[in-house]
Image (cartoon, rainbow, N blue to C red):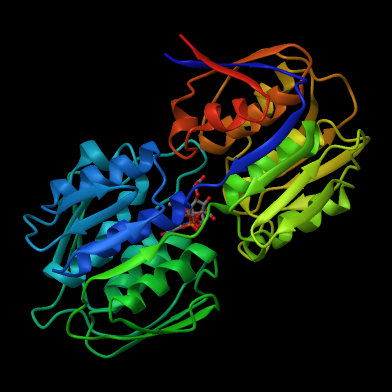
Length: 419
Ligand code: EPZ
């Protein structure tokens, strides 16, 4: 099993380019199932989850071509609308195929996603929404099947009992081909939802209100091909900003979208991190030797993102004092705590609240990644810790960070992959 070895304490200077957002690229790839015409997508990140989604599209009958960074997906000739267990078990975002397949083929059969390290993460709200759009939902042998009525899905009004990002995306895609108007209330407002709506609109969908909690979709008979450039990855950018806050020396994070990072930038500034905007999509970050402890509660966008919670905890391990982190989105997203404790960080847990006593020596250690963002947290801590840190099960990191070692080595970090 591969490990990442990091020699802590190196100052980082230079430029880190931000890749396309994994969590925008995944629904965009699923959206290509909605049309018989080719869709060209730019800035798709080269990460494992994307390769898994492409495998899923190919299993469904789509063909994918790539030339100089642009992927062209042609889903003209779809086969059986079945997302097999072998694919879904490795990536729960396969549930994003449900809505498009039910809308395009009248039927979708997707293996129920198994458990996940950070929580149960059911897809019951995706299914409840599809039922409201007229689909019959059946479940057997670990698969869930959504069967549209003979005339196709019907527009309807659905109020999400709780905000779900991929639930919003799944139903927005299904509604584009439903007969009539669909209203989604209490919808997710994430930038990735807005980016998907922009792609769908380019494909001929009629969508109003993406980015607000009420999205209206007027169904159309068919969608056509389009070209689209995926937004930059705000969580990748936030991760490198956290690293720069600890060991940056004029580190430039380039190609990000500041408006997607409002809550994170606000908290970094409260922590006294030196941030300068050196271009419309470039932030320059430096550590100034001291870091104020700042409390964070994770919330849906535009609040502080849960996907930055672990990285923030790593940052607060080096702050001068006590800070509190409350995780409100997932029920088990503190697996990185045990690993940070191995590095000497003093953390108390009480339910969904972590108390971090920063300011003590953080030493490199052998640690283990448990999920994607927990592994990012350990990278951030390892870059600033005294001595060497080895992170085991680094395949978690490869799911969502493109060329992480190359990007960090290029700005002076000592990061290498070892057996
Ligand atoms: C998306 O996951 C992201 N993944 C996650 O990023 C992110 O952490 C999450 O949104 C929250 O922002 C992708 O976009 C591919 P949710 P998603 O549905 O859509 C509960 C990463 O690190 N829920 O918004 O699966 C759920 O259990 C990943 O890149 C239901 O109960 O998250 C959770 O507690 C991790 N029933 C809460 O809602 C449902 O049907 C929010 O989940 C759906 C969700």
